[in-house]
Length: 231
Image 1 (cartoon, rainbow, N blue to C red):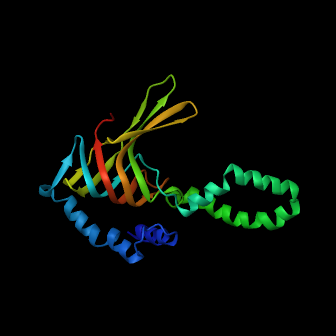
Image 2: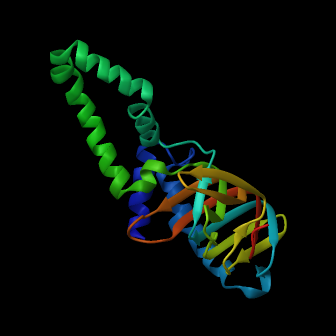
């Protein structure tokens, strides 16, 4: 609980609470919502536990899952700073300054850059959820990696997902894949598929890489569809 409370304070510092005050976010995560969510989660007669394909619309969503990614969202402030510092245009301009005005670069430009770059790098390594989290977008559940001249590697999303929307309370507890659409990508000698399972997610997503394999999230989604196999 203390970790989540500290995370809320940090998210507020970087304007990532989506208009919520710190107290409202605390009530949402640690207070009334947590209590009501716990009772709903354990009240079997009012919920539909999905072991097959199921979906919900215009719903609250909360979960603890592996193999989660968020695409097409709004990057954090630190993410935007990193994008600028690592852009080709910025790096080329710094190279030009270093060659053309070496003393000016060394004593005027470089010190403030280091003051920005060093803490940003530290956070990217040790607190990556603050660095690369997205506050809204399409959430993928599970993936498939296709390695050339090798077998595919399937990674379902494990954990649990709870929703409360137009179709009532629906939760998934088995390994699942997103059922809405597939996002494709390629890297080096492999290409991969990510399976979208929640559209228009708006809320809080926390990852603690190196400490836990799970991603924790709570918020709203316009459409959630999950199932035991990818399509």
